[in-house]
Image 1 (tube, rainbow, N blue to C red):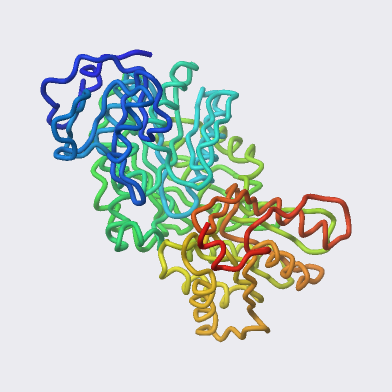
Image 2 (image 1 turned 120 degrees about the vertical axis):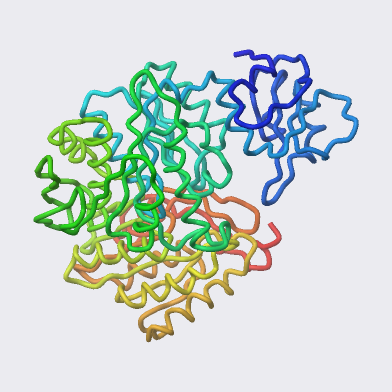
Length: 526
């Protein structure tokens, strides 16, 4: 694809730049290493690097033009476009480069603190059951027909130009709908502003990412941009539902969002006052069953997912599908039952042991709470929880998560979760303080085991027949960061390796982490 630089500012919602260089663009990159001949390089300031420092490298790699901030480059000798906010402009420039693909699709956006990926996958399965040609972009992967593309090691919304490229690939593949999972980072960094959303779904908004947003109110406002975006979606030939779907049970966010949303809106929940609600809920270790009820329908739903929070996720997806897309409730229920599970979400790892071993992504206080509550409903035995808290991220949740585990689990093993360049010992001490504040006793009800693989092994040794060992915080993620280095890591592989050792059978090999054989001072230098 080749576009004139001037064509990238068609339908640009800000003051367009004047006297644009007459150059042709063959692609867009925000990393100078990804630049190929003819590319447009967009220089942006980030948390750890400033793209303006790599402009010469982008030019050396063949960049045809550069976009950067006003005042950052004096008397450029190359095609340079100065903008007030290159990051905010990027999503619109990328959309124009790909001929605004979202305008050719029905776009369902899903956001929230916990449950985004699960709810996105449920909606996708419902669309499949309804015979709709749909794709999905989640924090785990992008699904385009039979093709599944990895979207990165750590979970966040892909960068703006990648999102638009995925959407364009979906249009070219003949798809008509897309489920797009969006994070608060994605909204605050304008990555999905040109996605022309038709339906917005929120799962919940609880404590998370205060390191990025500062306050809960700022975090909530970033999430709420999904609903304000519904107001500016251009009319589409296939129709524009313009529906907001919110969680009636989420006490912190419901009143705010209910007032905030200016388009059509519906709520879902477990209580009788919800527009779409659940009755006759049955929980088991193999799934959930309930009856979904609204003023218009009553349908029995069964799912392989577990826990009360997944009843809510199913209701969110059902509400969006039935009222936003006009899908028959019975077909929606079939779609829900077709989802076997989500990688790294309450994923059962069974190698013949006499207790249950689970890997879950729960990495926030609320997610840990509902995961432990779900685990409690699955067993009459003890719940043994392995978890950590990330370095260079929201510090308040370290203590909160340890408090939650001390209250809801029988035994807790505190360990590493992406310590990055922070002291792991310091993080574990903050967590231990939280556990002690809830009457946790170190060496009796909680332990600190710095290496995550060893922590999982230790938890398995504590387990008796009928117990549940649940490793939380990493889920499906494929790496862990020590210092500035990402090491290949998968909690599911680690659990399988530890179980194989425990049972004395052949199995996976425990992935390597520097905490196995290096001191903290050594990996902090890496």
